[in-house]
Structure formats: structure tokens, C-alpha cells
Image (cartoon, rainbow, N blue to C red):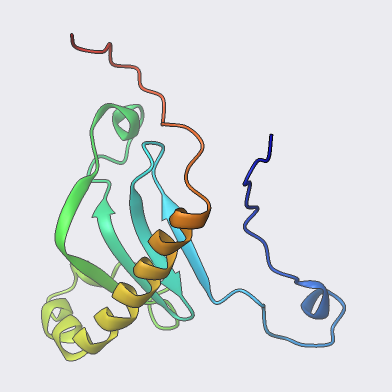
Length: 132
């Protein structure tokens, strides 16, 4: 039987050996335990599609993620802790940078396209009994 298993990997040897200072990876996808795409990081930008509103103790497992209608945008060069969305000027800041949402859409499309050739191998587990 032929298994179509894809290991997400990049050759980082040039960076690790000092031949270059840049990583071969420009993007990173953040997934939930349920298999939902939560966020994408591309270079200095990070886009949140779903957020965890309950962040203490077992609440992170008890409550579902909240799906956003418009992704949150973070510029990790100036906001590495991703707290800018709590500021009074965030909406205008985000509006002024809404052009980068095309980048988020492009990267998400590339990620989902990769599932055609390398589909997920199993469904996420659950603590909730199945309803019949």
C-alpha cells in the first residue's frame, strides 16, 4: 500500500550553518486541536481567524474558539506580544493596513490547496460523547 504522507519541512541548514541569516520558512500556520486554522503568520504579519476568549485554566479546553468575520492583523515587528487590538487606535490602524488581508487570503488558499495532495489523516478527538 502506498501512503501519501507529507512532512512539513524546510531545509534550514544554510541558516543553521551561518551561510544565510534568513529562514527558508516565511509562513507558519496555527491549528487548533480540532483541526481549525486559527492563524497564519507570514513574515512580519500575523492574521487571526479564530480567537480564544477564555484563556485561564481549563477554560482553554472547555470553551470553543470564536470565529472572526474579519481577521485580526498584527505587525509582529512593532507588536510582538500581539496586544495592539486592545488599543483605541487599532481599528484605524487595521483599516489602513487592510491591503495585507490579500496576503492572508493567498496564504490560506495555499495551505488548503496542499490538503488536496496530502489530506489530513485523522479527525480530531473530542471529550464530548457523540449524539445519536
